[in-house]
Length: 559
Image (cartoon, rainbow, N blue to C red):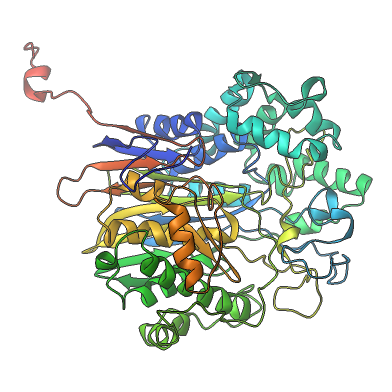
C-alpha cells in the first residue's frame, strides 16, 4: 500500500467534543477513552492507554522500558516527565566488542541487542505511576484495570503483530517465557488468533495494588535480579532502588506564530525539531509546495545539520553541558541556513554518527473536556526489546543498551548510571496561548524529522491532521536521503534529487505510526488521527450528561 497523493488517506480521522484518545492499537485507545468516561482526566487516559499498549503492542513497550511524557494542564502549566532508561552500575565502556564500521552500534555476538546484557534499568513504570499520582484523578489500580482485562481476555493478532513476531522469531525462541507466549507450537500465531498474557495480567494487577515499589523495591524487582544473576545480566537491586525519574522544563520555540513545546534532553528530539523549524522558517515552504524537489532538498539539508549537532552536543544532561538556548536560537538557525546551497546537497559532518536507536516504539495522545492535554512516547527500543521475558511475570525487558555507543571515549559511550540519549519527540503546539496540537510517533532516530514534517504539513501546506500524519515522509542524516514510496512520481522525484547530489533510497515507510490530536481553534472540536504505518486508532466522544432542571426535579415535577 502506498499513498498516491497528499490528499489521499488510508484511515479516517475522528471528531469529538468532549474527549479524544489516539494510540497505535484500538484496545489501548478504548482503555484511555474508558478512563475519560469514568471520571479520569487526560493524564489518566494517556497512562491507561500506555499500560494497555504494554499488553497488546508487546513489541513496542513494557513497564520496564523508557520514555517521555509531555503534559499541558488546563491552567496552562506545562511539564515533562523523563522516565528514560539508565546504564546499569556494573556496566563498563569496553564491555562490548564493536563491529568496525557499524553505524548502528552493532557488537560481536549481538550482545547489546538480544539477551540479558542488552537490558538497561527501565523507568517506565515509575514515570507512569508518578504521572497518575501527581496529575491524575484516578488511582493506579483504576488506571491499570483495562490492561489487566486485556491480558486475561486476550487480543487479536493483527497482520502487523504477526509480521513483527516473524521478524524476531529466532531471537524470541531463545527465551522460554517469550517463546511460550509469542511462538505457541513453535511458530508465529496466525492473523486473527488470540494471544493471552495471563502472567503479565497478574503482574499488572499486583502493581495496581502495591504501586511501583512492587518493581523497584519488591517481588517483581527480585524476580528481575534473580533472572539477571542466572543469565549473566548486570541489573542489581541497587540499580532498581536508585533509579530516578526527572520532571523537567520543556524545550520551547516558535514557528510562524505557533509555539512549539517539546522534550528537552535526555531526548534530543524537541531541541532539533525547533532547530529545524527555525532553519525552515527562512524559506517560503508553502509556496515551494509539498513534495517538490526544492522543499525536500532544504528539509534534507536541515536534517543533516541537526544530526551533525546531535552527535556533537547531545548526551545525558546530568553529566554534559548542552547549549540548548544556542541550538534553538533564531540567530544560530540563520547561520546554519546560510550554509545551505539551494543547488547542491552537502554533508555537514565528517562521517555519520553511530546510532543504535531502535524504531520499535509507541505513542499516544489524550485530551479531555477540561482542557488537559497529554502526548507521550514510550519504548523498549527494538522490537520486543531484548526478547527476554522474566519467567513467571510475563514482563518483557528492554534492550536500551543498544542505544549506547560501544566505542570508548565518545560523548555517548557506556558509563555506569548514565542516562541514555533518545530521539523521542512527544510535542505540543500552541496558538495564541491555547492548545492546538498534540503529536508524536515511533521511529527511533527518524522520529524528530517526522514530527517536524507533520507540523510543516499543517502550518505551511494547510493539510488536515489526518493528511499530515499520513503524508509521505523523508529522512536524511547523511549520506543517504530516504524518501517514502508514497510520494507522487517518486521515480522522477528521485532523479531530480539525485541531480542535486543526494544519494536517494525509497523505502516503504520512514519512522512509524504517528498519531495526534488537533483542537480546532474556531469550533473547539477535537480531531484525532492515526496513520497507516501502525495499527493506530483515534477514539473520541461527545454528548454528556442530561439537561436537568434541578428545582423541578427536587419538587417532583416530571422533566
